[in-house]
Amino acid sequence: METLNNCPVCKHDKTHASLSCIDYTVSRETFQILACDACGFRFTSPRPDEKEIGKYYQAEDYISHSDTSKGIVNKLYQIVRNYTIKQKVKLINDIIPNPKPPTPNLLDIGCGTAEFLNACKVDGWNVTGIEPSELARKNAEQKFGITPLPQEKLFEINKKQFNVITLWHVLEHIHQLDKTIDQINKLLVDEGVLIVAVPNCNSWDAKKYGAQWAAWDVPRHLYHFTQKDIEILFKRFGFKLSEVLPMKFDSFYVSLLSEKYKTGTSNLISGFLNGLISNLLTAGKGYSSQIYILKRS
Ligand SMILES: [Zn+2]
Figure (spheres, protein in one colour):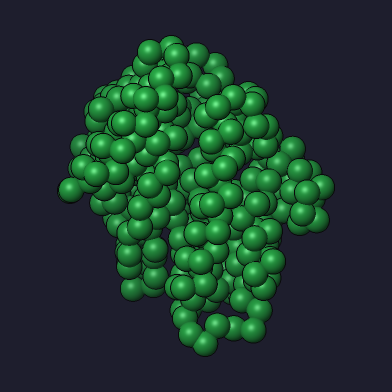
């Protein structure tokens, strides 16, 4: 286990206890979430270090790695994922500066089993993926003939070449946050766009479910971002927030899971209703998960 002495966002060295959360997916262990005294950013500490974290991903429930479709929540997840992948491809095509390069380059960090990368490839993008899970890399190769690179290879790419770099629900899992964003900065072309999607712990559903909110997802989620945290963090690296987009399906998925953690059963109606309320009551709080479009300032 490792303890963080400084706020990962603003580097301040004073923190206070914020919340105790249980790992409902794998270990049933309890983890602490601290909040920075200066900027309020919340992060998991102590946390398993990079060598220890692997065992906390070893569960069939961790669907993005194994691609199982058991259970109604997982089934819904698969259907929605196919739809959201199409939306993501549309998004990258819409934001790329015109004229679009003949073969634009895209890097997806934490590409999982490469569904999104494959959709981009089919759409004419030249794609590169980074994925720490060996199982996910093998699945990507078998299903799509795409060979993602292991995590450490990210730092061996040395050409400024990517028009778009995406991290879909990945930033909150990365131990070496500064080193990774530094590398992203080196690889993204000057007019390039960085897309970061993360859960929003300021959302209505986060408040509603408290410590049982599924997107705390300790200890796999090392950081718990709000829009303000994203702005402060990326400003340090010369990026400015250009646009915020909702991920409306995440409210339903997270509420369904949270309902299960809270009550011990999958209550579809309550989960659905709370997902809906979360999508309607966003004023000043934002959606359950959000997409942040970042450009160089
Ligand atoms: Zn801070």
